[in-house]
Length: 362
Image 1 (cartoon, rainbow, N blue to C red):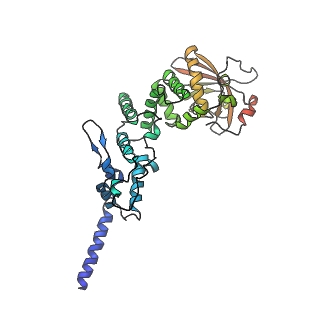
Image 2 (cartoon, helix red, strand yellow):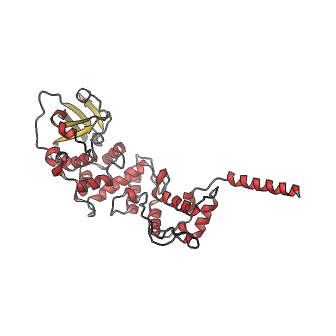
């Protein structure tokens, strides 16, 4: 009898070891295995919150969670929103499961349990949804990003429905911007920004710009700020201040020169160190703006003038790599090779009250 008990104990230990030694199935893989695709390309994700899916997911949790229903909910929503750097669902799957989870009804997997998860519907935004402006179709944007990527033969980073990387987000933003100018749900200032970008910056140059400043540089926070801005209360937002009529540089002060590629990366500079105390070589001209609001307004008002006349005057607050902010008077000229020549003079001494304002730009 003692031998039988020892054998049973040993069998249990071996079984436990075997379970622990098995590779733990990823939640993403389990959820995706319950997605059904139709011939028309649409998908059905109702199986993700079925009893079968819940049982499959729970069977891979070692040890079993103390609150399995809540853990299942967090796991699904974590992938849906892409939080904690989790791999998100493909756009079509995300769109489908969002429609399912936003219904105010208890999830089918919990209907026989003392659990109310789902009764209020979720308010979370999906990973892809949060990166697309309101009123835009994430599926369409995603598909166009794939087409754009595949058409750029020099770029070997293929975008697929399951690959999410920085280059993919840059392509998404590039495609989105092409649609924003005609999106009537967006504020007029946002549409003007999009129209100026698509009309005055070549597509590859805009992609290069986003590589320097990041795909979220033009984001919802910026769009809301453009919508709510009060130029009358802030001279830094006034067109006459940002893009004044032609003026003259102070002949008693140095004038520096920058050469920008069409993606606004600075490739050559003269007197930048002497005037600003720091080198601007390899920095991005838009990226060193003290605010995205200022960049957006200069894109709206300065670039069309520059394209039409070949020359534009402007003012800009720059934030140097050291964190120091300077006000610059600027004359920009178009030069051969789709480059820009930026002549600048430090005029910070004339605008100390503006530079010392407590409220920062967005």
